Length: 82
Image (cartoon, rainbow, N blue to C red; front, side, top):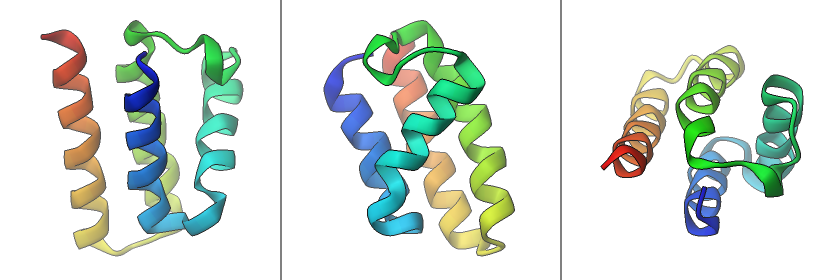
């Protein structure tokens, strides 16, 4: 996965989790994909997006924020497959 997409994930997550967003993303990658964040590739994005949606959904019930976050994830997934 290009580094700019990783940064977009962290940025989008920061709207929900603030400064803990990078640590959260990195932990999701390590725990659910079994790899280091620097080894993340394009093929991993769809699975990661599913885990992020589930995990963030547990942390907040703000539907507006969740929908916005989901749209960013969907956009990144589409970008990766085109």
